[in-house]
Length: 174
Image (cartoon, rainbow, N blue to C red; front, side, top):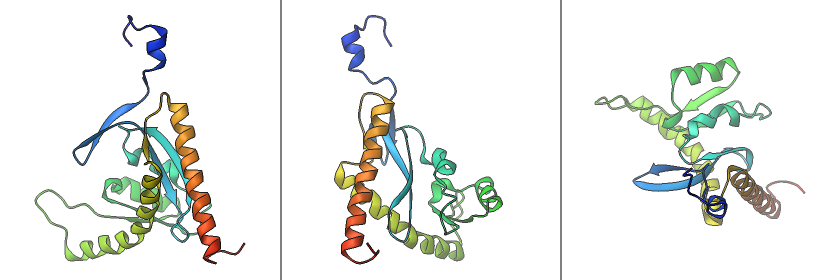
């Protein structure tokens, strides 16, 4: 922080937030990572952090040991041999999409596996679409504590809205 900033200016500057680039577009602020129940599309766990922190850094914190399904679905960004071995050691069944090596396309069998996993993961993407309609999973506030509160409140609102829909559609008993 520059020494010349007065207290009023310091209150208006967020020193915790960071920049990131995704699909060629720059973002500044904070973001939300979630663990979603695949059957009902409800958020089970969440983690907030600065925009530059990669989602894979929150992977272990989002694992829900109380979940009855032991399958863990994730995209290519989470793929690593160590991660899959650690998941298996904890009793999970890793369903993480495979990445192709440079200049070596994936075999047909791996592509078919990725497609099967993508069908399940598409249900989670519906959650992100709903949150995006509410204002997005990346926000700008002044301070990490405010960001945590705002993103947690957004996830709670999504879960309430989703629960109301599930009850109205008789998907879950009331």
